[in-house]
Image (cartoon, rainbow, N blue to C red):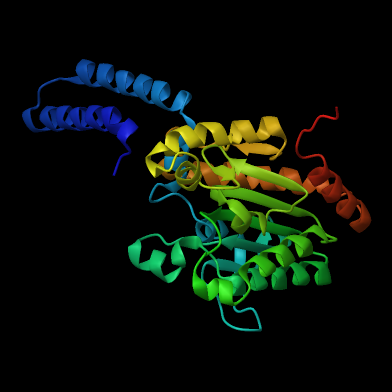
Length: 316
């Protein structure tokens, strides 16, 4: 289903499809009309997607069909072997992790996992982890350090689950532990924001040497709706909040919060996942090559300096 700002594109695509059907069924030569409409459609797409507003990018980051962590693991990596459970309470399906190969290089991978449909979203709690999910992630971090393997994290969550059950099991404490544990990794750590990067739920697996972000993803301390509800007491002001939060990939790169933007196909990653997988794979390989010459202590210090540099202040 198209987003509101995509409706003119959908209407033109429908007209083009109808024109092609007419030409095929009647045998009338409509090649010139079809070519003109195709060129018009391409121009419209380029104009629409060239300068999206922050809120429109938030909408694209949430669109159904956008590649998930498991999609990336299936199409960018080989030999993914999933590990389950936190060895304390349960297995949280909102976090997936295990061992994989990236162009033959052994790596440890972890990521938030949303569902591909309503049924799976309910099973995976819409990608919002409980404490056991982050304990599973820390288990993967321990594994990476133990065997000296690069640690790759894929972020796509509106936030950690805020329900009573999660609070009873120490949600805030576990997120803090995960941030601390990832900060102490002695191996190369790379995080990629695939879609939504919401609050501490995202940061828990985002303390990496390099943070990459897909072109239409967002990363923020709070969602636009929640921010609007607090500031203006109206979640409908989310577009205004999205503008103020500086949560787009371009804003984050300028602020130094992320290190690299991974381009998406025109219209978003869901329009041509295959192209996105190829681009993302190359970005990951280049980033790992950049970090490969650093010693464990240098990797630790590099990560420390990266996060100490964040933010701006003024001394009077």
